[in-house]
Amino acid sequence: DQQVKQNSPSLSVQEGRISILNCDYTNSMFDYFLWYKKYPAEGPTFLISISSIKDKNEDGRFTVFLNKSAKHLSLHIVPSQPGDSAVYFCAASTNTNAGKSTFGDGTTLTVKP
Amino acid sequence: DARVTQTPRDKVTEMGQEVTMRCQPILGHNTVFWYRQTMMQGLELLAYFRNRAPLDDSGMPKDRFSAEMPDATLATLKIQPSEPRDSAVYFCASARTGDYGYTFGSGTRLTVV
Image 1 (cartoon, each protein chain N blue to C red):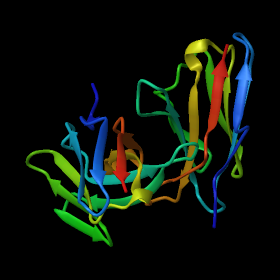
Image 2: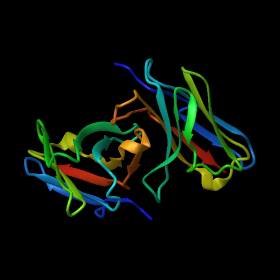
Image 3: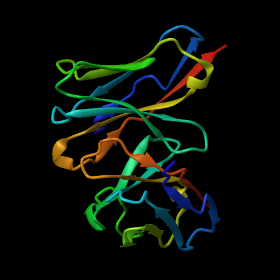
C-alpha cells in the first residue's frame, strides 16, 4: 500500500511558466509534508515543507499548497527556470514516527529554455 | 557546508559477496536514515537510528541486511550475501531530533552481477 503517490512520472514546461507538481497521500495521520529536489548522481535536497495546520507555505519561487480534506498537496514553481529541471519527491511524516518520512516515487520536471 | 559523506560512491560486486556501505552523518545530527532507490520504486526506507539506537528496521530484509552505528560518526549498511535484486542506489541521510527535513548523502550505487 503506497501511502504517498505522485501520479505524474514526468512534467515538461516552458521556461518562465508555472510548474505544478502534485502529490496525494492516504494516511490521515501524516502531519508534516516535504518536497525534495534531486539532481542526477546527487542525493535529494530538502526544498520546502508545510505543517498540517497550514494550507500554504511560500519560499521565493516555490509555494506548497496543502488540501487536507482531499489529502492532496502541490508544489508550484513560478517562474520556472532550466535549473529547476530535476526529480521532485514528495514526502510525508507523522509526529509519532520521530521524523521518519514516507516518500513518493518522484516526478521528473523538465524546464525547456 | 556540512555534508553527509557516503563511501564508496560506486560498488560493483559479484552475487554472493559481502558489501559494506558507510556513512558519516553531519556532526551534531543524532538521527540517521538508510534509504534505497531502485528503478521501479521511489525512496524506500530501510532503517533508521536515533542516538545510535535502531528505531525501525522493518523495511530491511533481515536475512541478508544489517545496519549498525558503531559510533556517532559512522553508520554502516551491510549486505551478506548480495543478490542482483539488491542493485540500487543506497542513500544515507541525517537530521537532528525535531528536524523534519533531512540532509542526504550522494549515495552509493551498488551493482550486483
